[in-house]
Length: 212
Image 1 (spheres, one colour):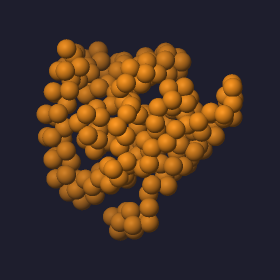
Image 2 (cartoon, rainbow, N blue to C red; image 1 turned 90 degrees about the vertical axis):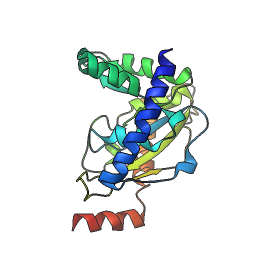
Image 3 (cartoon, one colour; image 1 turned 135 degrees about the horizontal axis):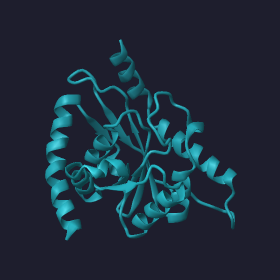
Image 4 (cartoon, rainbow, N blue to C red; image 1 turned 180 degrees about the vertical axis):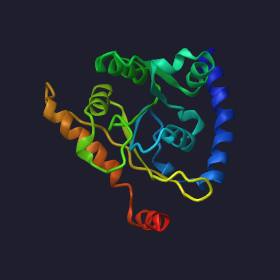
């Protein structure tokens, strides 16, 4: 029942938010032909708190992803209900990374999509080596497709133009019987490298124009 209500809520909200982003930020989406028709893990760079909104609105209504949010924000009931309807699930700030990974794996194995930011926090500089290994570990253990997403910086109303590009999905393949920490480290860096490579030359030129 909750799933049906959440989907209905999302479809309505999806239309309103998408139109709003188009007007306020001239939101442009490319690469939607790369969206898989099976469960996937959305991985993206992370500039601002609004990134999940842009990414979710760029997906198809049927692709509503779940995503982590600090448990503290759920204590305010109206906000907690809103976030739940948007697909968020609580993660305790003092909890272990293992509990967050376990919850995410359960969601993916249940056939749902999940959105995650491999860098673990908002960043302003592009550095693939800064990626945490959690997203790579989840992708490898769940055996689901990874959908790389690049979203451009800049959030000035009516001035900035926000670009979002979906890359080609891929699997994090493990050839070892027991993956090592080095394997997950390399997979994490590869994950972020794939994301940053989505900022192609035409997009770079457009972003340079906005900075002038």
